[in-house]
Amino acid sequence: MKTHFKTFLFSMAFMAFIVCHANNKKQDQGYTSTEKTQPVPNKQYIKVALLLDTSNSMDGLIDQAKAQLWDIVNELSYAKCGTNKPNLQIALYEYGNDRLNGNEGYIRQVLPFSDDLDDISKELFSLTTNGGEEYCGQVIQTSLNQLNWGKNPDDLKLIFIAGNEPFNQGKTNYKDASTNAKEKDITINTIFCGDYNQGISTFWKDGAQLTNGDYIAINQNKTTVHIASPYDDTILILNQQLNKTYVAYGQIGRQKKALQMEQDSNAGNYSKANAVSRTVSKSSHLYKNKTWDLVDAVEGEEVAIENIKDDALPEELKGKTKAEIKTYVAEKSKERDAIQKKIQELNAKRKSYIAKQKKDTDNGLENAMTKAIKEQAKRKKYSWK
Image (cartoon, rainbow, N blue to C red; front, side, top):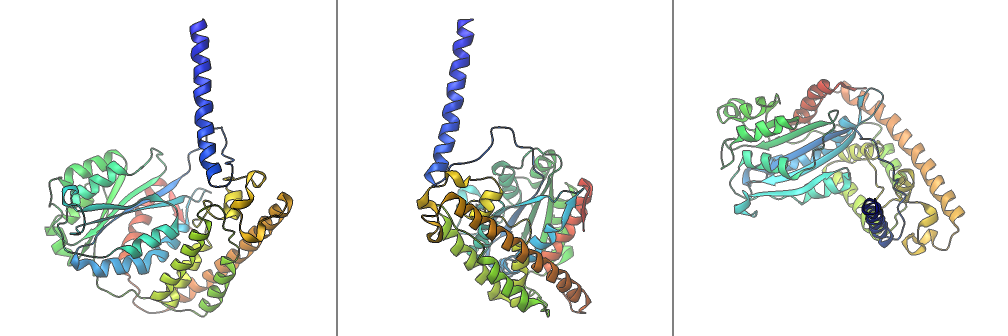
């Protein structure tokens, strides 16, 4: 009996150490976590691993990924499962680039699963091309091994692999990788950059069919079409107002707010319409920044204002009482909600306007991904409003 009691005390002490250690990590950022001790229910996710060939011939593909990211995110933001809106996580890999380690199959995990849309944009814009060997089976298997795919049966788990070399190259058999993916309820979609029949003869279609995924062939060098609308200027003005509602805090706050502005600029460098698409993404439930924005952090119960240290606050809140800080954050939250609602209302009109334009807007990567996601989401009872 004494032995059991000692074991119990040791276990309680160990758990106290773990909790204390976790809280200390939060305190190092200038705040105390408000994470609950009760188990958090599983959240529903759309998980997308994007595996991009970054060899010499793929400049057009990378350009499409940069130019079409926000339209893809926007389409996913409309997804529903019953009354719930699933969250989104995107992982990014590059393969087939001579700058990468040949012993690891010329493969690099650029970003693990992340819901930080600014980080995803940043990493896409960091990609450059160079000649190399493209091992599709190996990059698929690497993503299966390295990423946290989770075990929630309601999650939609997808791989999109894009390239233009034979699918069966490398030491890892793509059929084995596909079998492993299927066991984890992961669907592989293949995007061949070139002629449709050539992709079939080089096993890209087979690579998709093994997991009941989609095979699509695209012209990776086709320029992305962005259609301007009469609502764009107003939406971009609202974006400037939206940015003023972010309250940077902690060690990374200023850096992350600068990153937000940088990705606004990156989107705008493609076209005004692309900047508008990013603004629409920022008005959706998928754009959250609780690691650096006090409004999102309080709403997501990441921090408690009562516990936040003065040196973690932005200049405009230093020396303020806790009550004053709460009022300030609440006002910013209310202001943000109103701006986001206006953006969504204008975007509904914008979408209707664009749909009526008789232009070729068959943007390769965007269309391939959204079409496949919508079809495969039906298996999980997802719908689009």
